[in-house]
Length: 178
Image (cartoon, rainbow, N blue to C red; front, side, top):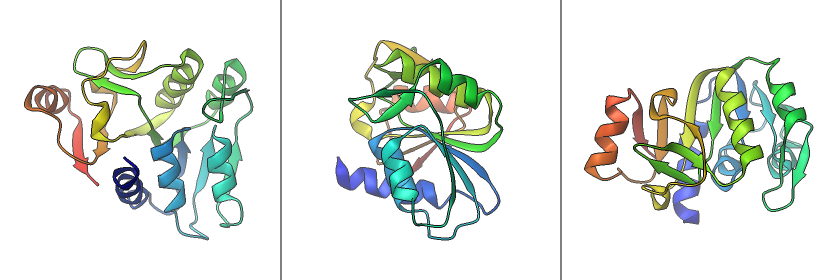
């Protein structure tokens, strides 16, 4: 799904406005958002992802990296230290990845620590964006981190089936194709 993730990331990066404070969650699609931020863009990025911090290094974009327990499988920093750090911040926009999206279960992730970080970021956000490719539609993974009505925008590569699309729209979520 790498081509789809690139398109989604490029589209999502274009949503960010100068002067904003943005949280970029760990994930392969959120990495693409960071990749398409232009050098010198006057924003502050907070991230819990080692690869995103590395991508932004040298781009002259103010970047804050959370502390936390390093998750080997994903390169994410997570756990109570990360959640505590995020609780003192305010974000104009957050961009989160997801392992699954189900009408009843909402957005989900397979790692409890990473799901808690996502929940913390949502609590501190004026706007919540999830970036995910369509292969995850209908998947219900163990840890739900947000019901549909907590997400303002889903940026993806194609529309979900009618049942899921209607559930998202009824919850007030915009679905945009990148």
